[in-house]
Amino acid sequence: MSEEQAEYRVDVQLEELPWTAFRKSASLEPFSSGAYAAPEPREVYTLIKKMGWTHQDVANMVGVQFDEEKGRGSTTVRGWMRPQHSAAHRKITYAVWRLLLINAELAAS
Image (cartoon, rainbow, N blue to C red; front, side, top):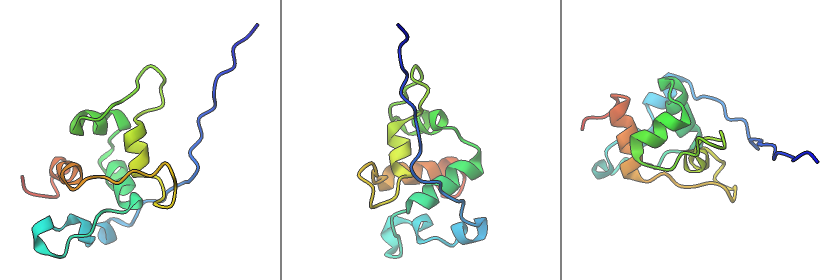
């Protein structure tokens, strides 16, 4: 008897923001500026893609779980890139977002 494997599908295909638009995003502002806005999933996706990071890179960078055995990446990282209306969406915290921006050299440490 053969064992069936679950198929992994991404329910939404995100598109990268133009880099110039990304660089003007309020999500790049410091929290204390009063102009900060939490990043949208598309902004998280754009940063990760532009930097050439894998889910494992991001997971290791910020200390979230990565399931190497199943080969599906990080549920947490995927959740940050899910549409906000999706049950699978996870908000990225300011501290984690800022750490990604620092690693991308887009924010001062």
